[in-house]
Amino acid sequence: MKRRDFLRLSGLAAGAATMMSWEGLAAWAGEVDAFVRGPAVEDHPLRQLSPHVWAIIAPDGFPTPENRGMMCNLVFVDTSEGLLVIDTGASVQIGEMAIRQLQRQFAKPVIAAFNTHYHGDHFLGNAAFAAAFPGMPIYAHPQTVQAIAGVQGDLWRRLMEQWTNQASLGTEVVVPTASVAHGDEFRYGNLLVRIHHYGTAHTPADICIEVVNDAVVCVGDVAMDRRIANMDDGSYLGTLNAYRQLERNARAKIWVPGHGQPGGGVLDWNRELFEGIYQSCERAVAEDLPLAEAKTRVLSDPRVASKASETKGFESNIGKYVSLAYLEAEAAAF
Ligand SMILES: [Zn+2]
Image (cartoon, rainbow, N blue to C red; front, side, top):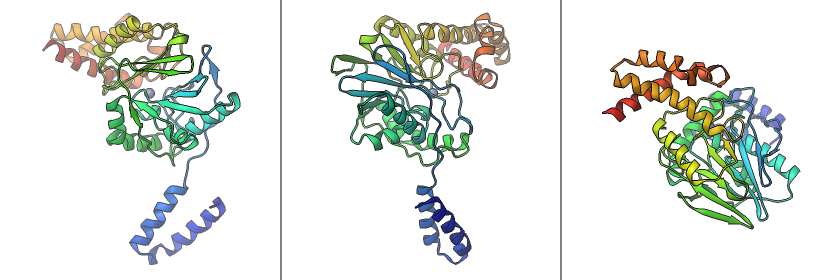
C-alpha cells in the first residue's frame, strides 16, 4: 500500500468507523498497525576497531525522539565465513541502517547474531537481521532467551516506542534462537570466538564475547564508558566480580562496551565508579547510617565526584543507583 492510499483509507475509515462492527474495526486497526512504521534511521558510520572487528558507535547514551533510539553500540566481526553481529540495536530501523552500512563495506552476509542481554537496545534490531538473513542463528544466554520470549521482549518494544515518540514503530520482537553457555567456543574459518558469563552482573544473564584472535572483548552492558548503567536487575558485587574474572580469563587489548567508546581502560573506568558508589554505601551500612547519608558520601567520594560531569545520565540516575547499592550492601551485611 502506498502512503497516499493509506491516508485515503484512514480518512474513509474514520468516517465509516461509527458504522463498522467492532470486529471490522479491530481488523482494520491491525492492518494499520502492520503498515505504520517509524522512519528510517540516519546512517551512522562503521568504524574498524581491530583487524576483524568493526563497530557502529552510538553517539548518545539514551533514547530520544531525535536519535530514534540509536543509543547502543553494534559490533561486527568479519570472518572468512561471513559477518557476526553482536547486539542488533533498539529497533528494526536501526538494524536496517546497520545492514546498509555492512553492505557498503563487505560483500558477505551476516551469518550469526549474539544478544549480550535482554535489554531492548541490544535485541530489538534482531527483526532486521532475521528478515535479511533468514535462518541465521541468534545466540544468547538461556535466561536472556526466556526473558525476551516472556515479559521483557514486549515491554522493551513498547518502552522504546514511547521514548522515541513512535520512531521505532513496526519493530517486532524476534527471540534469540539458540542458547550459549560460559566457555562455549565458535570457530568461523580461522577466527575463534569465546563466550564468557560470570553470574549476575548487569543482568542475571549477560554474555561477553571474546574475539580471541584480535584480543577484543565485547562486554555488553557489564561495563560502560562514561554512562551510568541501569542496575535494576544487576549487582554491583557481581559486576566487580565479572571484571576480575574477565581480566583473568580473557585477553583484551580493547574492551567494547554497549555504550560509550571502546578502549583498554573501559573496565578500569567503570570499576572505579562502581567501587566509589558501592564501597561508600558499604561503609554507611556498617556504621548504621541512613540512605540519605550514604548518598552524601557517594557524591563526595572522589572516584564518583570526578566522573559526575562526564557521565551520561548521572544527575537523573545517581539517586536510584545509590539506593540499589545501599540495599545490596545491606543484604550482603545481613
Ligand atoms: Zn544497553
